[in-house]
Length: 188
Image 1: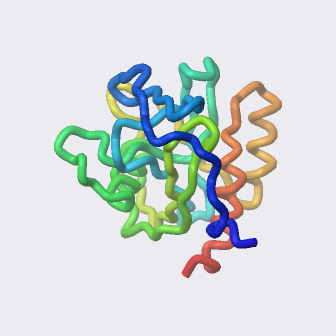
Image 2: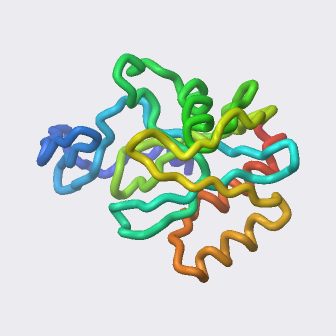
């Protein structure tokens, strides 16, 4: 049976706001509680390979998990004042340069989906950055302290597992990102 032909379980139509913060809201629909981003654009993860065939990863401390994490460059879409209508591709270029110090000629959309469909309504887009050029140090904005890692593509998965063994939190989306990099031609 086609899943689009099935009727979803009744979750109720009334949405109750349990708490609203600056960036997130806690909502309830029926008996189901979930987090919702207050910015309408979702998030974007930028798959970035330098001309030297190195993948860009970023390291930063994440308060929610109280751990240093390894991630790919990423960010919220439309989160800056005056850019509420910013698109995914423009946000990706902005975040790439801000976090890594690399500028790209353009980005191409690959895929999007929920980050944690049982807990959040957030949708994240995967994009591929093209023609990277180093223009600065990166490190994020004034609220971030990002360390940039350039890892040879062939060693990326092994490098991530070594960081995990050292105690870093490794975002599982990184392994999906590595797959997307190797199979980007499927999305043309």
